[in-house]
Image: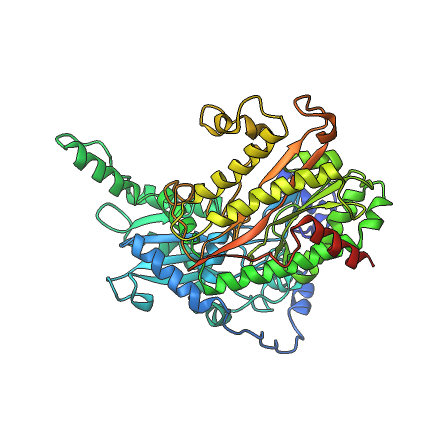
Amino acid sequence: MTDATPVISETPEHAGAPEAQDLAARGSNRSQRPDSDAFKAFITSGWAPRAALDVEPLPAAPYTAARRAALSARFPGARLVVPAGPLKTRSNDTDYRFRPHSAFAHLTGYGTDQEPDAVLVLHPVEPGTGDDGSDHHAVLYVRPLAARDTEEFYADARYGEFWVGARPSLDDVTTATGIEARHVDELRDALAKDVGPGGVTLLVVAGADEAVEALVEAIRAEAGAEEESAEEQGLTDEEWVARAEAAYRRTDAALVEAVSELRLVKDAHEVEQMREAVAATIAGFEEVVRNLARATAHRRGERVIETTFDAHARLEGNTVGYETIAAAGEHATTLHWIRNDGVVRAGELVLLDAGVEVDSLYTADITRTLPVDGEYTDVQRRVYQAVLDAADAAFAVAVPGARFRDVHAAAMEVIAARLEEWGLLPVTAAESLSPEGQQHRRWMVHGTSHHLGLDVHDCAQARRELYLDGVLEPGMVFTIEPGLYFKADDLAVPEEYRGIGVRIEDDVLVTADGNENLSAALPRRPEDVEAWMARLRG
């Protein structure tokens, strides 16, 4: 790749005895760029007028306005800071491809690699006078395209047009998002306005951008803004609790919680993005099946599977939504097997857990456990059918009004019953299902479901009462993914089960009258899987 660090001049003044150089500057030692006045004058001149970028409103823009209004309602009078995040170092001076923080993407509509170092701020205004009648006015602080007569144009590896291409202007950002855009250099003054005791509370989504968090802390310190004490003399218990709750609602933690909970119920645009992600993922699974023969012939067959799917995800979407699990044979009993360097053998199973992240950053998360040579053995089919029955039981209760935890409980009843039938449990299924038992969980230690959306484990900072103990509502999207995993050295099971790992995972949308399996187009029943594989392999 090209050199992407500050550079050292070749002009004569750098010749001669070496000068002391600190560690931070030494990455430039390999780079050689002139900095003469003649070079600067020449490289910044003689360019044709820039063609305007083809910018249209983002499809999500009408929906993001409603999302921001919902967030506004939870924090009247507070200034809310939602960073996109910075580029992250992969190694030395090379960065990972940028992905904005999910809260930023959700509230702005930006996806793919947009926009590093940008910050969305919801400024408090008089109640009802803000955007769409809310209590806040949104502003996006970004670094816009620099003129070609600036050093940034040719020398800045993070923002320079020579390095990263033409960036959008402030007008472009506003056109795309529907949000007023300002230069990021104005951010500090904008955040500091009226902050302090009796004034504006400043809250930031923690974990998104350390530099922005440090800026917020510095502004708070300068303004003498301190968190309210939850302990005051002379209060009743009820008053103390009410005051403590009010104080918590004005903390960064409460903002992190709120932007996560906003995504528990998907709007129409989000559901459509999930459908696109699922469809692209199913096509990726088909590509894997077509390449299974190539996988069995390679010493790293799992990696053939991984790269087949990942290449598809990059071609048809933004990338994968998480590291692909391509686990063949006994590796399938390792829940998060992502090394993917093992062989793929005929007669064994391969567990593929993968999802395409589309350009809007919504991801699918699907798992199928496939017979490498196209047909399940009797014991493989027995285990597979048990897992499928558990999944079907979970689907049956994933309806409005049920609790999220009920989905897992339904799957576990089936798993425990089958393990009892097979003589693997040291107690009855009923005893194992009791809180004091749980012996069946030896062979399925993970949960059955998690919310899905912009993150593969979406809404992870939501309160327990809204997530695990939450009531299912239309618009919720989550996985159903029971499994059974019998490790090769598990002496608690007969030898015929050892080394078999099976998981079946689908993406479910709660509807007004039940649910929809978004990934139903990918076969689930063992006989359907076999027929599907035979058709794809010719």
